[in-house]
Image (cartoon, rainbow, N blue to C red; front, side, top):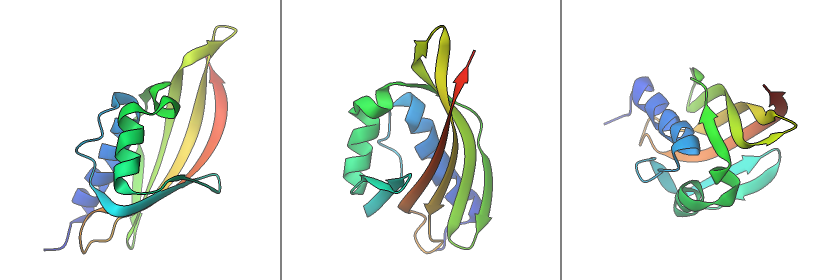
Length: 124
């Protein structure tokens, strides 16, 4: 049975929530899922991404994410949200505006690829 648009958005949301919760066991990654961040490959398989989200120091610094805005075009789910990190710089926290594109085919509803564009900012 094909995954609905709502189910595909829920898959992307599970990933986004895992960025801050550090609990990625329920994120529906395809085994060969990859992630590219600002042109650099940072995820090499579904299991690698799950381990990184659960325990990776690059994700442990994330304190929170905002409610994402989603749009769906074909097999791609686009999400826009902000994240804020735990460390602060001169009393301000480092954050980032995130634009992520997930390849989540309706045929299986699994995340096959993530492409992230990140624009840092300082938050009060």
